[in-house]
Length: 384
Image (cartoon, rainbow, N blue to C red; front, side):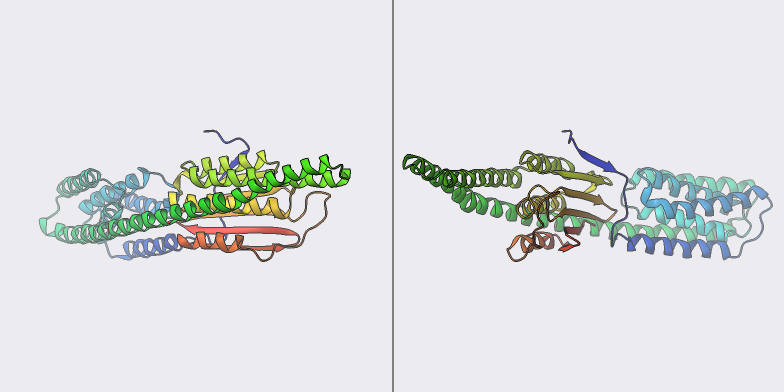
């Protein structure tokens, strides 16, 4: 499904988007790189080993910094090169402390990544062992010199395996939490849809019928034309509200999978009601989990409904930005249409409280407020 009028931009950096886990990972890898560089090692007889060692250190540093930008399988490729190259350097070094540490780090990083397949890890490990054995044999190294490398490899692989198991446990827990959150969101959406349908839609439908009857009676009794105009205007407003309520129910019950498709349908419905809505998608919409997408879609529906209610005719800007560990939704509109009278900031009601409750169901936060005549709803929901 193509969504016309939705702009897709490069990923941006939103407020509170600083990835603490990425900073911790960079700091730990930086510490490990420092240890590998300062570990004592003899100058190898083959100069190319020194060049290869420093190239591996550079590869390690660069991959650590840009890891969040690399799509599979490139991180695994980088860590495999680090493992095999470090093993070759260790095999050719008389005192392989530093190179062995690099190979061990490569094995740790390759093993600890949950997305790396077992066959890939086994192949890279076998290549590292073969590279070490061939290089060690080529330089005439003694078997005793291989002991430090073996200890380093076992240590790196063991810690990597523990980190991998821990990551799998966290992923399982996160999946269970997402399923619980998705169930809660679906139940909340179903409840809201029932309330809108059973209360608001029925009331508006009855009001339209009453106004039709009032118009007919007024016309039959020769009522003043101004009275008829006001009755017809009220009937038109009630009919528009009924259409909007039905669209909201349909959106809550049948939002398509994927936040981009859901936003496209929501915005199309708002534009059909005469609203001017500008939408920007920043980042990869496909990475947003279903529970988070449901919340973002529900908040968008409510925010657009409030904008139409409090500032009819005023343009609305919707921005959805996906980061590495969270999604940010921002809906902003001026509190008056161009050239129209300003309206006071919205107060009271349950719209903002309802949106905030929906965000809190999946561990998110929501802020809403007005400044300089602009009302902004900002919802941030983590998904990792």
